[in-house]
Image (cartoon, rainbow, N blue to C red; front, side, top):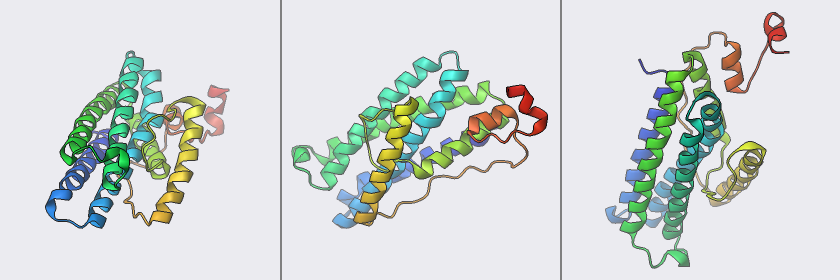
Amino acid sequence: MPNTLDRTIDTTHNVLRQRLREASAGVGSGASPRDVQQMTDTFMASTCRHLCAANAVLVPAARQWLPDGSDLTRDFGRQCRQLEQALRRAKGKVYGQAQTVHLSWSSVWSSVRTEFDTTVTTERQIADALVTSLDPRAADALASRLYRLEVTAPTRPHPHAPRSGMAGKLARRMWSRADRMWDSMEGRVLPQPVQPRVDRTPHGLLTQYLMGNPRLGAENAADVV
């Protein structure tokens, strides 16, 4: 039976895929330039937030708990950069940047779809391996943490920003503030990420650790000292 992490990632991918279809069809559908911009921004912001959160949550967990985690996460990181580069070109095309004038709409969205599909497949491999390897409660905790970070993650593509360690954490914080300032100035209205439905029974030590939110009582504090 699918658990919370499975459901959250599957639902998120489906939502992003639908937004990609809407954005890529906007130019030929007779939609106004403003509507095309809004659909593109919605897809781009939602995708960037999810990629950032996945790198912050799933990647460290995979490296720690999966035997082949380093290989999986290396492929995922490379694929995220390629998708974010494709998203930059799409944004540039929509907003009329000079560097994208020579690009056709079909080539721009074809590149985004290709990179998106490959990224989703790679992320799905990591998620499936984590669900198989971890206790269900620990996997649910990853889903909760994924959502919390996605809410505050950067909303624009930054393909060259660091993604792991302290450098990645600082970069996410810096770009999140900068992106939201620009979002406010441009009047971007962005939807909320997919929120997981997690059973609120008490968490064990591993679950608390994966959530990044330990609440250790006296009865188990000695176990981790």
